[in-house]
Image (cartoon, rainbow, N blue to C red; front, top):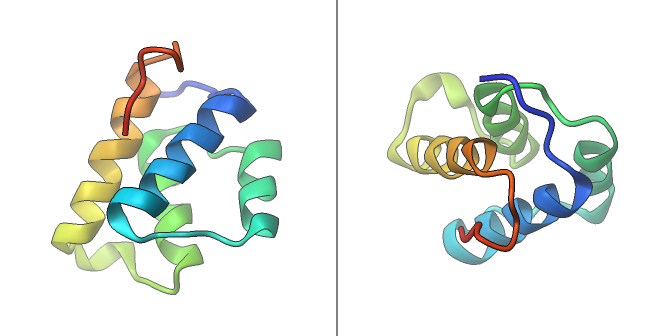
Length: 84
């Protein structure tokens, strides 16, 4: 699914990944994702995972949770209804 999230939606998503899954990206990498977000949920999840120094190819349970949260964000366009 190719959807471009807004910077506000990306911030909500990144905040949720940090709070709920412990994947807290640096402000510089957050800005990079907001300025040039990957076009699909899988690519976005991979970027977040790699930014933490982890390998998405391993398909860990944590990666599956990250991908599920990112896919949810891509499916919901209204940040007022979106909760991570």
